[in-house]
Image (tube, rainbow, N blue to C red; front, top):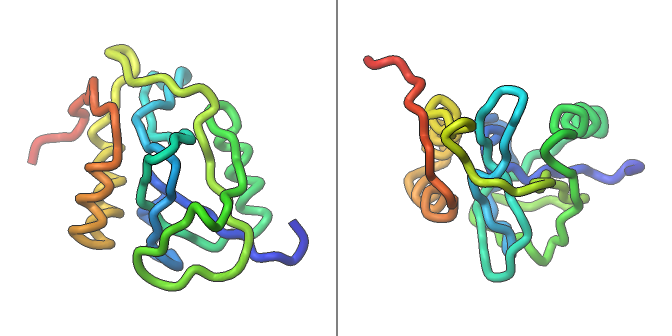
Length: 157
């Protein structure tokens, strides 16, 4: 990876971090609830290559150590891949030079009754989206697929 800048396209729970560089749309990738985390019996977000699909997200700068840390954390369910800059459409901000990475789903599988989508996880992601803006949040909801088996694990107010 040398001295080149490393950028990370995030599309789920990592979007809650405030120090992003820009918001973008990733072309030819579909975001779905498609990552079954067997160890804790939940379903997480993932992206898979799909012609004509798009999903919005955020770009962060990360150092090589952070990428290695994420590689270890995500190794069971995701694979880090480099994204061609031609697949990135800028929504807001400036996209700096550098290599763009993201994590794609290794084995896409939709949510099940035994491995539901947790409402607390949805809340974390939507909090990040709402901090960006209404249009970003709406696009997130419209470009995310397979909203089945949601478990309401939040406490009532």
